[in-house]
Image (cartoon, rainbow, N blue to C red; front, side, top):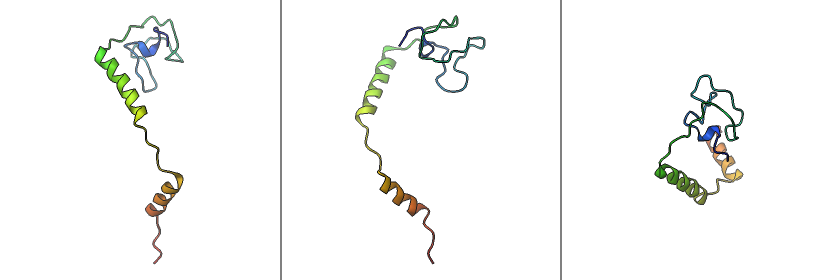
Length: 86
């Protein structure tokens, strides 16, 4: 990933329709691509934040468990919306 990209900028907002906190910043279509925005300023992250993000990413991948299969989901659906047969 390029260093001069929106995702590395302190003004970048990861969610929402406006991805930049600078009102007059040019619209960038791909926040992970290199760009020449004049409002760019590197985000300051501590080493602990960087390491914590890396640990969380790895932990999330190693602890993945498979979800319920389709028959289990169908059984729960039927139990939830079961009509009274009386």
